Image (cartoon, rainbow, N blue to C red; front, side, top):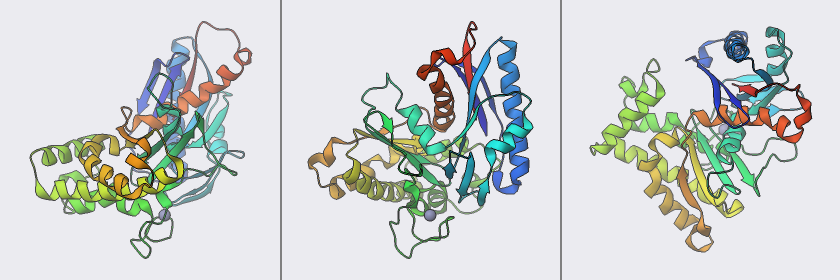
Length: 318
Ligand SMILES: [Zn+2]
């Protein structure tokens, strides 16, 4: 769990992190921790005489943005959680709160201006689950009810592994972090130790792959092939300029790239895979939280008169 506050120029004003296994905690405990982290962040801003204009909370799952409710978080096993109201009840400050899907927020961050051709991109955000966001013509594609981008639950293997959503053979069952770790390591291997930071565990996998450890290399290639299978389906539909590999893929995706490219060449009808490039995010796990802060700032870009004049303005996101 992390928070990030940005000013209008994108400069980081405050940042907090907390390791938390949300599976072992109740909804109330998780929101309590989140509220504490947000209070620390707001206090940092107050110390700098900065007024936050908004707060966007990123969550993995289906979000009803009208009511600020998490409709379904398959990997958290949460249903109909009114996160927006729960957080409002725990904060003293009157601050506008929005809830969004973390894949969408990652896409907002990856599509930010100044980062090359990012007007038409598909962002694949990998954690235990796999989420994503589609930016088409510079706009995030949300769909009729806001549920677009649930790419992790495309069926790629009918009758395959059970998914957290209750179905079988969803894309995330073969290319989420769990699938990689199952292939790459025995249950007692340190790369599966949740007490270690995920970045360290992924760095260890990279070291093993770099020195040619056969099991690690094959696991990364196998997961890369599955990433490529789904990416080819989506590339036929969207023809993005780039597929941006974010979340855990940003750390180990360079070892998956040859397999992804091969599947794109094989599975996309357009010549040369429609010119779609495969790029690694430079934001990694930080993409979603950064996208949250950028999205909270959007209100100021849309209507600069909405805030009281102060020397600098900021936004927080978690
Ligand atoms: Zn699923």
